[in-house]
Length: 269
Image 1 (cartoon, helix red, strand yellow):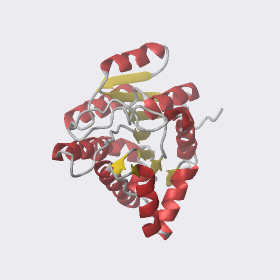
Image 2 (cartoon, one colour):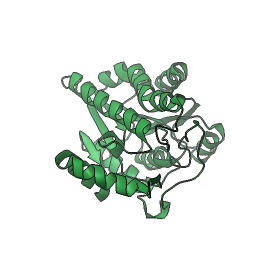
Image 3 (cartoon, one colour):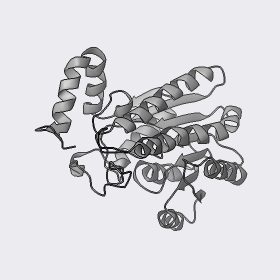
Image 4 (cartoon, helix red, strand yellow):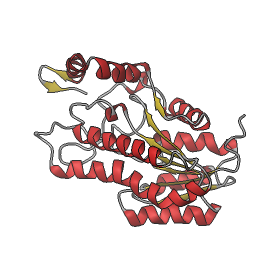
C-alpha cells in the first residue's frame, strides 16, 4: 500500500454518500486524516460511528453557505493543524428542460457546484499553499459537453472547470497541484437527488444504475490521480469518447447527444 497519503490531512466535501464516502473509505486505511462535511446529519453520524477509531472529523454543513464552509475548513485546520488536500466533491444535478424549469433551480446548482468549491478553496488556500498540497474539483463530462435537460448542471461544471484551470495557472509557482476530475455516469445518489423543474429532488434515476461505474472504482481512480499529480482525469470510455468527439466533431456530437437523451421529442434520460 502506498505511503503517499500517510498523515496527510484531506478535506472532502459531500462525504456522506457516493464518491465522497468511497474516497473516505479508501483514504482512512492509507493513514490519512480525513475531514468531511455534508447536509445529512444522520448519514454523517453513521460514518463517524463506523470509523470511531480512526482520525475522521465530521461537520454538518451546506457548501452553498459561506459560513458553513468557514466552519468546516476552520474546524478542520484546528483539529488537524492544516489541510494538505482539498477535494471539492459536493454537488447536485438537475433534470428539466429550460422551458419548464424555474430560475431558482439554476441558482441552486451554481451555489453548490461552483460557489461551494470556491468558498472552501478560498478558505483553505493559505494552508494548502503552505503545505504545497493539492486542490481537486469533482466535475463532470457535462463540464466539457453541455447536456440537454441538465443545462444548469452543465453551466455550473463549465464554470468549475474554467475556474480550476485559471487557479492552476495562478498557482504554478507555488508547488500546488490543481486537478479536475470528470467522471462519466457513476452509480451514486446524484440522479435521485437531482432537482426537477421546481427545484425539488426527483427521487428516481432515469438511468440503469447497475451498468454504471461504481463509486468505489471511481474513488480508486481519483486517489491514484492525486498521487500521480495529474492535471485532469476523464473517466469511462463513453466519457473520453464524448470529450474527443465534441472537440473534433461538435455538430455530429450534437446529434448523437440528442439521440441519447431524447425519444420522440421527449427527454428520457
